Image (cartoon, rainbow, N blue to C red):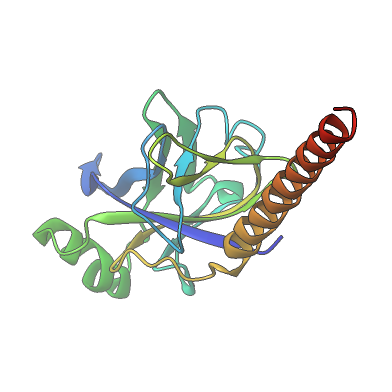
Length: 195
């Protein structure tokens, strides 16, 4: 599967601790349905990130590898999971570029959203239709976590992977319904024949 990106509105802030600027926020929140995207809604379940917290994850600005804010392998970013979701704490680089491009706009309230780049683990998502007929993708296990990012726009680019997964689910459901309908038709024919 390809890398996917998801964004969330919510608390993200720059804060000072011991004269060091930290960028803190949630890359993902649990048990909250996304807005509709490509014909379905998505929900991340608790435990989805348990296997990837040890990955070498980057903290990027707008998912841009040219703007590295921190990295777990360098101990300049920490990732934790709590009841709310995937929390990150980045020790921001003390550079004019990051201060002007990221920190100042965050402090003004211009940057308020986070995003994460990931790949779903094999068998790590479930598709179903809820009582209102809305198709839900439930993510239970992330296979790879690439980065968490404060973002200017909540972009849902790189959707091809999830759209393919939705298409596969719809095709499998159609085959199942077709098989059930064919079996029911054969049973009706047998009932009529036995009359």
